[in-house]
Each structure stands twice: as structure tokens, then as C-alpha cells.
Length: 192
Image (cartoon, rainbow, N blue to C red; front, side, top):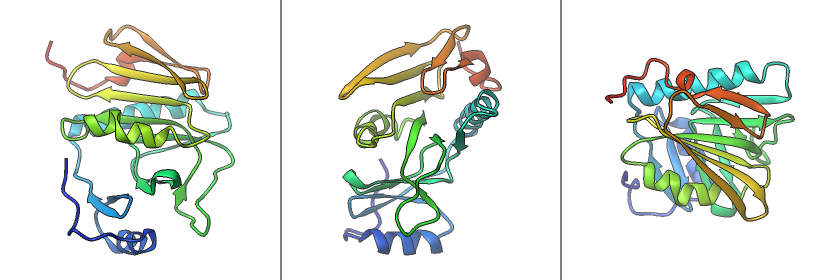
């Protein structure tokens, strides 16, 4: 896990001021500023593949798809973060007083890396679950064909499915759309 900048606590306003002036992105976790490291080519390819597949599947529907440059605010956890892929049902809801920070995703996906996989599965997923509009989560392994899929079925209830067969089609319930695992992993060289 990356280290926090200094050992002081920042307010959300201080974080946003620093973030807007910075050439790099950082996550804000309850007063701590955590620098985000760059991803691998496979990490980026998987995120782009998913965003492209979603964009195509949802053409003409009432959703917007965002990549890792779009900031998300989770007020219950005092967390600003940048999911790898995020879908929002229109209309967008923005943080009060901001034009650059979304608060109403319905779908989030993270591409797992060795340094963030525990956080993405644990504390970050726990934070995402506090978002009322959020109902579907994908965790995509960049080192092997493996997708973890969580769907909210009721208050405090999530259904978990796992896919490791490249020939499977993933049913995304939020959108009533399908994505082939083979298409998701296009251009990714996985050692058998």
C-alpha cells in the first residue's frame, strides 16, 4: 500500500485545492492524502476494454461511463477516489458546490493490482456500499482470467459470482447488458 503524504490531517477543501494544482492524482481517505501510482499497460487496457464494451452496450440508454480521471466523493467515509471504471444513471449528481465530482454511481469496476487488491476488495468496497445508488461491482484480475462480480440483491445483501472461463458471458444486472470475458481480456497476454 502506498504511504500517505506527510503525517498530517487535511480537510476535504485542502485536499481539493492541492488536487486541482497537482499533476498527479491522489485519493483522500478521512483526512489522509494517498498518492495514486501509475498502472501497468494491462491494467489500463482492461479498464479501457471494459469502458468501451459498456459504452457500446449502453448506446442510446440513460447512462454515462467514466474512466479513472473522474473523481467520486463518498461522504459517509470521507473518501475521494478515482474508480477505474464507473457508470452513472442520468442525471449526474455532483457534490454540492463542485462541477468535477460525482456522487451517484450505480456500477463501479476496479482492475486489481498486487498493491491495491486487498484494499479494493475490503475497505474500498465497504465504502462503495455506503452509496445509495451503487448496486454492482466488478473486480478484474490483470494477471489471470478472473472476474469477481458482486450484485446488490437487497439492503445489506450482495450476491457474489466468480468467472475464470474466457468463454463465459457476464450478465450485468444494472444495465441488463452482457459482456464477454474474451472481449474484456482482448490484447491481454495471460500465461496459462
